[in-house]
Length: 169
Image (cartoon, rainbow, N blue to C red; front, side, top):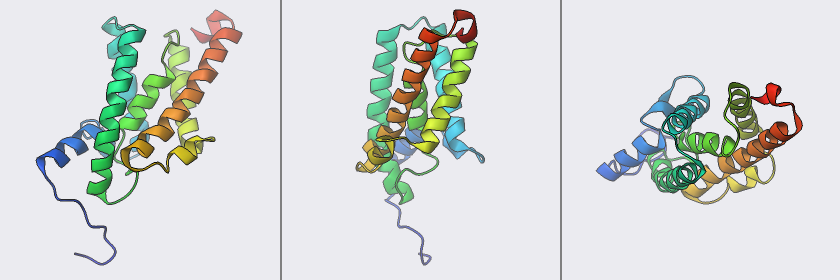
């Protein structure tokens, strides 16, 4: 093994499944801005849910399921890459986009604003998001993005409430 390179966990079938899930079908291997690519994948899933007629209950179930899968696969992916919150792991961005747009009236302006708000808050990690990142394994990987997404959702909800409808929808 080369000096300075982290030791990876054995590559088992379970590890391969975890990496596939955590990278959202390898979207996280995008050569530029994998977090943004993961957020875009979240928008694709959001659009599929809207086109499929999913309501708030289905959205919440998808968020919970993906959070659980992200926590499990995040721990395995961190072991595989030998680092915390590895760049290719983007399931946290997918869940973050779904939380950001949860119960927000769908429209091009709110969706675009949600995308940019989430990306900004995910990068700056306002309190306590940065502290949540320190949680062990996949939970820390997921929790910081989910906190940033809650902030983005609250800002979007406030904008929808405060601004004229033609501005936000």
